[in-house]
Image 1 (tube, helix red, strand yellow):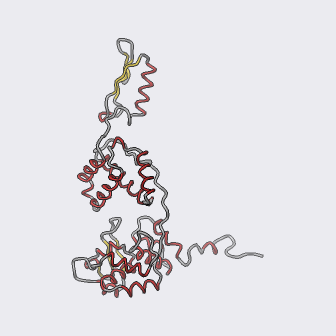
Image 2 (cartoon, one colour):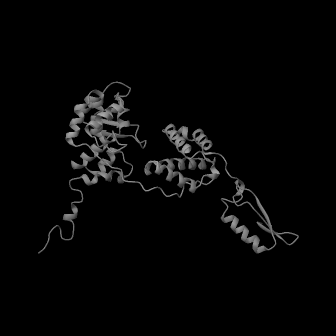
Image 3 (cartoon, one colour):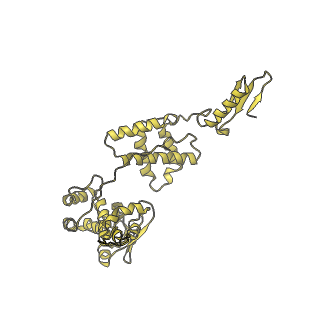
Length: 323
């Protein structure tokens, strides 16, 4: 029993509130009511009473994560590099000292240095994922203090696209592989990384299949015969050899007010924006862009020529105003 009466009349509380992974707690009380109250308190606060504190620093946990989980991920090396930066910014605290107060102070400090809320949220979300993975592998028993921490409110990123005249100006500046990769992005909505890593075998019968996508799922987009003939090659290597910085410099000559952090992504926005302005279907656009959630694609919906026009024809008055 958790509570038993001793020969001297006192009451012994003898429990392991967390089972084998927690410590055994034994304590004597003069009165049974005190013993019962202590037992209930201990069970309720089991996560912080009688447990062995995890004094490993985050960098040690990162090494374990990489050894048993991170190294198996497609983008594991990139995740590890970003986690290392986040842990360094937190000053590599031991797990038993990582709490919500430290995390809140960390967020405030980074905000004061001009780091965007979305970047901070993404970094902490990644760290939380590392801790959760270790818990599932039974390599970490401590609680994850990031869980339950409300994310910072993010500003809706400014989104811009190239007009028809700006598209023509850009294509006039480009030549060779620079022009071909730009035409591919403008014709398919491909991300820059998807386009520059494209290989000859991924272009076949008027279709381009993107393999190295953001969400890991391949997608296929039709292209014109003219574009296929322009970019198709028998090489097994990447079809394009383009210097990113040089390309961005030419892009900024045409679009001087490009939002910070977008650069070549404006080509993807340009495809999606013109697709909707030309009467494209929002669900079809979601499939072409490879968005996991339709809400991402809805950012372009307002550009459709008939966007919300049913408000006129389907209202109770059907667009008429009786005198």
